[in-house]
Image 1 (cartoon, protein in one colour):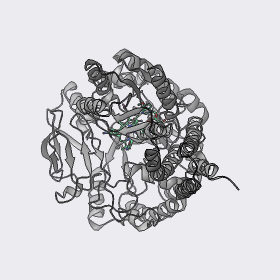
Image 2 (tube, each protein chain N blue to C red; image 1 turned 180 degrees about the vertical axis):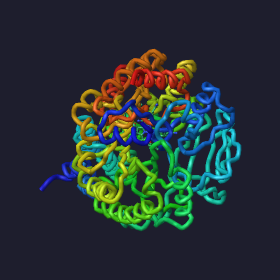
Image 3 (cartoon, rainbow over the protein chains, first blue to last red; image 1 turned 135 degrees about the vertical axis):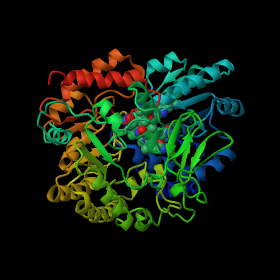
Length: 210
Length: 420
Ligand code: B1M
């Protein structure tokens, strides 16, 4: 018989939301420390991220895994708060102004959340003013910008310029289909990630370096 | 050789007097209305506002004078209704957020929010919540996900997601009769979008043409349904296919002899780096339905069938061939694993590439005319031999593409065709 934590990890890997929920409840009922439950969740998501990067699973599988994670988090979050366990870092994410593609942005957000960041998702088509306000309000450590269109690459450049102008001490990472390492460097971002798995690694590196 | 014969010949893998070119024959091989205006100006055509033939992506109609100026080989017959569910009729002026004066259907009803974003109503029905949204700095609409409050993901109903698929109405039949009349003697190849054969196209899942959609209508929700409820998806596709087969028979009876190419499905299976769905899932969920559609067409008509999928879909091309597709578009060579030489060598004698002519993520919008020319010539050298290639960019030519680059692209195809 598997332990509730093993069950939780495998429910996340398989994207089974009901199993994730019952395993989380069982773990809580067994008085397993919430930090351990969180770690089991993270392990499941990290595995999904690895298999996604290796083209073994695809967008639908990542989405169901993230949904299962959310179902588990709904039960776990109040307990974590009570225990005073909080994510150490805040990650703000959005798709830039003029762009409404959000599948990639959402995947990145889910994986980052799976790595135990507090994620604030500002949605799509986000203007620089809104962004700046949110960085200040949430005291974000990292801001992630996504763009999928060549017509919105200028908006990404503009967003980075405005954040820098404002002198905010926040790391900026960028990604999306037409974005390259070179473009990221050119517009003054702190990093570029080609996929959601790499985005997690980059985010962890950026907060460590800070 | 007439355009019609030329297009049919290359699809059947025969080399022709020159390479056929398409711009504007479908909603995935078109040109943004701002670029159509620039081209009309460049060629000194009658200055008149561009017609927005496809309001979602804001594509401009490539009217006969521009078809001639560009030397294009394919003429569309558009569906009676646009993606927002209204017919394109009684054109009226509209000014776009970027200040272009265009003409749109009289049923194109929008409002602007305080933030300056534009919202459009389905079916031209102002009382229905908007189904499309254009950011103030955007150049296209995107669909709005309108979720049904009663939706229960543990109780999915196929009928909810079938609402948009019905049999051809009398009005639609009359429309097709008049269009067939209009284009029966056209020298250009005729391309049409089939109604109801798109299986799970993510642009259509939110049903921007319906006033109050029910069922699975969210983008992420749809992908999750594919992963967790494949039986539901297969049943939906089966029902959809049955309706589509009936409609194809009706269309064939009315306009079968006029049509050359049918766009069957625009579902995107690729992302920039990978697939949306694994090969086994596509083979199980999509292939048998595609095959039914393609087999019917090949048994009963002289049409050639067209499959669109963006992205890095090399691992799926074999499945598309097994599904019976004749044509693949847009051949996104800028995505992972989509090397033109390898594609041509591996699949070039079994499927026609309609697209792939120039990179629309880099070269066409950001390159110099010289770079555009070089890339277009190279792609033509790779894809043209032995037929099986219709020149088109990769997907629609987007807003903000320099006109001199579009002209350089067309001139390069002419140069390639020179001497032939
Ligand atoms: C913060 O740090 C980071 C780090 C990493 C980051 C990151 C941020 N953001 C992303 N990443 C990275 O991690 C993610 C996960 O690994 C990855 O994210 P991706 O987003 O790349 O990957 C996702 C998981 C899956 N990939 C996707 O979701 C994009 C796939 C493709 C097929 C695509 C889709 C699905 C859609 N589209 Co659109 N669409 C295409 C795409 C083709 C392609 N080659 O990418 C592209 C991007 N679309 C394009 C276009 C033009 C358009 N689309 C449009 C609409 C749509 C749909 C609605 C149909 C749908 C989007 C649904 C939605 N809600 O997002 C229209 C515009 C809408 C708008 N106003 O924004 C429209 C204008 C319509 C048109 N085709 O003419 C093209 C852009 C061309 C260009 N010149 O830029 C396009 C490349 C297709 C093509 N072959 O031409 C990485 O990039």
